[in-house]
Length: 109
Image (tube, rainbow, N blue to C red; front, side, top):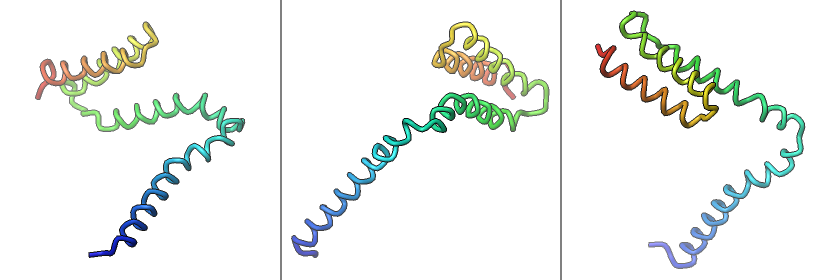
C-alpha cells in the first residue's frame, strides 16, 4: 500500500491536470474571439455542418421505393417546418416524429 505522501501527491497532480485541462479551452479561445477568420467561420460553418449531416444521413437510403419514401417525406416535413417557424427544435422533433411513424407503420418491412 502506498504511503500517505505518495497518495496526496497523486491526488494533487490529478487535480492540477484536471483543472488545467478544463481551463485550457477558455484560455485558448480568448484571443481567438477577435479573429476575423473565426468570425467568418462562425457565420459559414452551421450551413456546412448541416450539409455534411444531410449527406451522411442520406448516404444509406434504401433504393426500394417502399422503404425509401419515409426519409424524403420526413426531410420535407423538417424543411417545411423550419421554413415556416424558424425553430430548430420544432423542425428536428417534427421530422423525427414523422420519420419514426412512417418507418415503423406505413413503410414497415
